Length: 504
Image (spheres, rainbow, N blue to C red):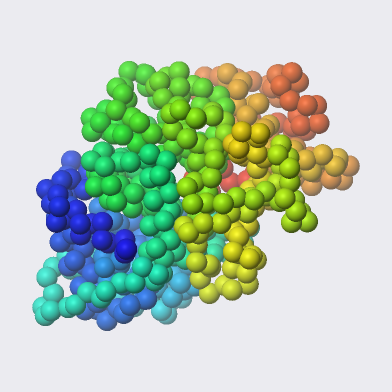
């Protein structure tokens, strides 16, 4: 099955059902199907051919949805771009992917204007919004017009590459993660197997649709179930809470840091969120205090899912069987092994790296056979995630291999220290990193932000930790900062924290 089949089925079977909600407008399945047909045929009329790459540069809005499904229908490969990227970063992804066309917003495209000469492969750009000051660009609305002559849409093979999503590239150049129609279909079927059934439901999406969680877990899964996608262009706590109440939203997902910010909303508990069935946290570790406060404030349990751009592999069950704090059990159809540095499986209770295998796994990295071979060995995906399994078969996230701090020969997971600090009533957010140290090998540094109107001293926080974590895990340095750096994917950017510590 190709991904566009769900949209075309919706247009036939429930044409007037709402597919999209954005601000004060809505689009039915029939309307979205017709719009994407026109965009797909116009892209082909521009000379784009099966397998060509088309970049998408939008905040969450109807046009990015139209762009995705038009690419699906035309046999093109969608390359969503992270809107946090700067000109040089965007240029790298465009050149590396070989994108021939770009669909996007004029205000975001201004980042690219100074480096246009460095984009020899990019032939045509269709933009929404005010194009003043931009050269050699066209209006996006042109793509929504009927073509002059007949253009046949291709029959798409489910094994074809349909999207390339680029990693955040915090330690090296971003890698282009390739997914096929079939692989993404299997990924969303795995989640639906956990009763993530959103048929006829309204599902909200806040994180960017360039993110795998929103692209597959929100957009593709909502259309698969015939539901309605409520789009938010950015994270606005009041708008989100109001939208959930107004549209009777059934599910949404957020990065853990955004759940913390949501809980700071004035009078948060006054909003009616009784329609919610699934609240997912993914992309980073969820602090236990955040989980507890969300339950107390809204009456819902946050469900943790563990996934990466390359594949999704684990999720905590919904309702009965949910084990708070755990990342749950393997998704249906996914197999997991935990191994040590030598590649040997570790016993129950011990920490090992996750090797995962399933039909929803990536096809590889675009034009990078070396990185593909390193990540995919003997059919298993090396995730870099460190996890332990309990006697009941539940998995517990410990940290990422690259983030583990080795202080005096002892391994320290940043998440454990962050959880302990996060429980302090004055603290809003925490980021913990290891910094090279001549004596210990690595020293533990913690950067914290405080809630509005609160104050705390380093000595006070250190004393607070003494009864909560082992002495060797207590940070050597605690710095109170106005805000924490956020990376391209919305997570705390640990490399920036390391740089802060280096120059301190």
